[in-house]
Image (cartoon, rainbow, N blue to C red; front, side, top):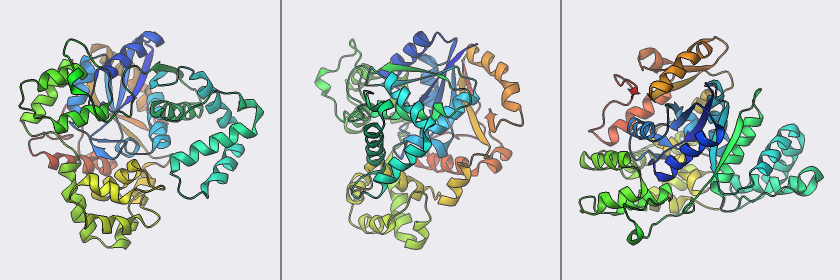
Length: 422
């Protein structure tokens, strides 16, 4: 069986995600679709709106045959590390293809650039070094500036049509292409052109929403709509049905009813306690805490009443909003730099938590079982969490235990939770 992999957060799963899965299967001609999904925390540095189990169940009903959890220490990273972990995991799962959304229909140029950069590491290192000393520029902006320098200096890639500005999906897709080029046996890339609203859209015009006319919009706009609407209003489920599939409507309404929606509002008091009780020296060892950010965070937390205000007070030209959020998440979860570096080490064994599968997905797992069990493979399929799993990967289990604290009605996220089979 040939598999196409999709790296996703589904925060929440919406109509655009269902479209992407359908296109991934159709364009690749694969026999099944594997979703590699971030668990209970996502790349922007925030808790997932609803649990990994609820999101996996919706994905299974809308085009996925198999849903696997991307390890926490890859799921909460900047684009390059996030992409590297995802691509390696899909390769370990035997995928022939990897599919992703893009805004630029000419993605072949990005693929050619990724391969050229893989073949010329010294030139890439020199370009990165040339921009690293620039002040008032975020890490992502520096990497884009380095690419512009490379293209200006080398005839072989000068002609390529590359546009990263306001193309967040394409930027992440390029990270996938670079990580894929590093593989001994690269997967075939299957870009899917994004349709509908821009990925960066923050707020919907809700008067245009209709249950009879599905809207392809951004996850950010959907989350804002959920957070600002009266969930008890009669028309609220109708608004949801315009932007997410019926199974996600049901999951969201159940989470709201049971007070299981999770976000930084629930996590913020824990962050405040940590920043007020820890010393600056203790905070300095937190993963991604650098350049004196700990002092800026400790001052900001004394002056703000919400997490959004906190991020606005800390971020600057060097530290983007996402960087601040990820560092805040590592702070409240007490993840130290040495711990994270250990989990990201090339020889570190990695878990692939089985969340959900249909009959096709289960048949594929049987075919992959022998390959994943080989000693040379550092990726380990986990279908049940027990004490041996916790001993092997304590950071993951600890993070999920804290997630459980954010909504008391949530079931256990790991122990005694079997995979979802359809």
